[in-house]
Amino acid sequence: MKRALLILVAVAVAMCWNTGWASDSIKIGFNAPLTGFAASDGESAKFGAELAVKQINDTGGVLGKKLELVVYDDQANAAQVIPIANKLIGQDKVTVCVSGSYSAPTRSAAGIFQEAKIPFISAYGIHPDITRAGDYVFRTSFLGEVQGRAGAKLVGELLGRKKVVMITLKNDFGKSLAAGFKEKAADFGITIVNEYEYAIKDRQFGAIVAKVKADAPDAIYASGYFFTAGPLVTQLRSAGVTVPVIGQEGYDSQKFIEIAGKAAEGVIITTSLDRDSDVPETRDFIKAFEDLAGYPADMVAASAHTAVRAAALAIQSAGSADPAKIRDALAAIHMKASTGTIHFNALGEVMKAVQNQVIKEGNWHRHSVIDDPVLLAPPEK
Image (cartoon, rainbow, N blue to C red; front, top):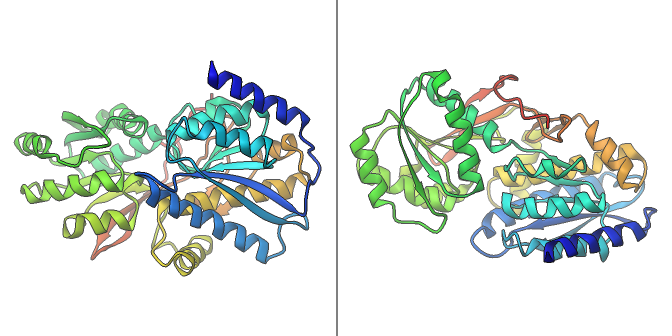
């Protein structure tokens, strides 16, 4: 009831909103977890977004105006993001909003921006319901199910591993990835021996590790974020489990390598950022990010950078601050970015290749690429 009332407030404010240029800058909203358990990801996402704004402003801005990033801390909390969304719409009068946050807050915000008819871009939240909020919502990263399907191909075909144990994080992120992996596992000759679940607060995995060791799998498909995957992989290796561990973009951080140490060597993930790319947009981003942030680029940074650049290009193409025209320009966008070539289907979902990265000598490097348009096709509705 409370959420419905807040959405009505957002709609009412948006109806009164002046769609002309209200100031000398064009405001892009940005929510990310800057404090709390996901603060490291939020910091990287913010640096990525700020880098995009700086690069665009240094080359003349958009339609003769500078971009202004309006940033709020959502603490990766679905309830926290609701007043933030209303503030961005009603007080800040943003032209577009980018979510540099996890699936739960991004899902909550998506409905509010949809009702207000303000374009909203999810940089890396993976839950399928995000874009189903409506036609003003877009995503520049993979759905969880899509990435899970790519994981099945990586394990069963590229690595030739057929006997797999799944270790699944019990949240939107983990469940979406698991669903995609299970959907295609049999197609690649994979037998799922067992699946074990854990909570996001867990850091001690002794019981799961013992069961995995007894299962004697050929590979482990384990979902998680760097702060859960780091301890998990460390404990698996300490127990003598040496088979390949396959993760996903939640591992994609230098923090994972710092936490897991030598245990991180050989871990493979599906993600959006290829550190060994020779594509100018990717190479330039990687260097510029490290110069700005002081540490290596990661997936969340690249995804936020991509989303802000997509927003700016849409505003430029629309030639207007009118949200409806910007939405239409986003729907028709085709751009090269640090995370690949970005264009959207009818649901606002991106279609691009999956980058598989492996840790060698303490750094992420290219392992392989999955570019199968049938396997990676996101839903259309």
